[in-house]
Every structure is written in structure tokens, then in C-alpha cells.
Length: 160
Ligand SMILES: O=c1ccn([C@H]2C[C@H](O)[C@@H](COP(=O)(O)OP(=O)(O)OP(=O)(O)O)O2)c(=O)[nH]1
Ligand SMILES: [Mg+2]
Image (cartoon, rainbow, N blue to C red):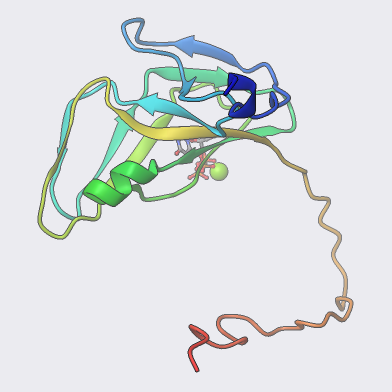
């Protein structure tokens, strides 16, 4: 079976300038062509006790084009295997931010510490377009089918 059958069509890409603040560690990298998330590594060793959070540097600074945002997401495998997540998921990296990207990790495992080593891939960066809203203040909003119903207004798990 030729590779073309398993490789998604190339995703339109956008240039994002990357500065490696720690030259021994890699720039953000996609594990497969067409992936949404590019892996970020920790520059430090860190042990997170159950329930503990820790802010880890990634050694990466970026410049996004206007109209783009980079979102810092957890990695599913580490979440499933170790309970590793991100407190403010997804973290928002603004287009104008030139500082080092940091990841606010948390150990959700009730019993086991998580030992992180420098160079471990701890999060993934998703770059996407966004719209800037022009907030127009009004006295009343247009009607909708949902109206003000929220927070479970449609029911719970849907069990009969
Ligand atoms: O996971 C994250 C989230 C944010 N940031 C950086 C980039 C972002 O542009 C900046 C500010 O983030 P945010 O606006 O979410 O935090 P804030 O508490 O509102 O800070 P500020 O007052 O600086 O906007 O911090 C990260 O490095 N990692
Ligand atoms: Mg902010």
C-alpha cells in the first residue's frame, strides 16, 4: 500500500518564527504530518507529587502572525497513563508574546508522583486562527431556540 493512502493531504501551513532559548533542546515538532499539536519539552527535571502543580519552561519563544494564537494542550497519553495535565488547559499564547512559553502542569494522580526529566515531551502546541470580536453593547439580545438554558438544561447522561 503506498504511503499516499495513509498520509493526510498536506495541511495549509503558516510561518511561525521560533527562537530556541536552550540550544540543546528541540524546536516544537509534529510527530506526524498533518498533526495539530507540535510537542513541547520541559527544560528542567521536576517531580510532581499527587495534586501538585509546577510551571515548567520549554526553552521556546515564538512570534505568531497577527490573527493567530498558539494553544498549549496536554498530551493524551501522559494524561491517561500518569494523570498529567495542565491547570489552565488550553494555555493561550498571544500573537504578541515574545517571552518563553511555559506550561503549568498538574499531577492528577491520587497516589503516584510523576518524575519529569529535562527533554521530556510534556505538552503540545496547537496554532490556529482566531477572530477578534468587536463587542457591540446592546439593551437586548436577539431570540434563539436555546435561550438562556444552560448548565444541564437538556438533561444529564441521557440514561432511560
Ligand atoms: O500556558 C501558557 C499560557 C500563557 N503563556 C504566556 C503567553 C501568553 O501570551 C501570556 C499571558 O497569558 P494569559 O493571557 O493567559 O495570562 P494572564 O494571567 O491574563 O496574563 P497577562 O496579564 O500577561 O495577559 O503568558 C504561556 O507561556 N503558557
Ligand atoms: Mg491575559
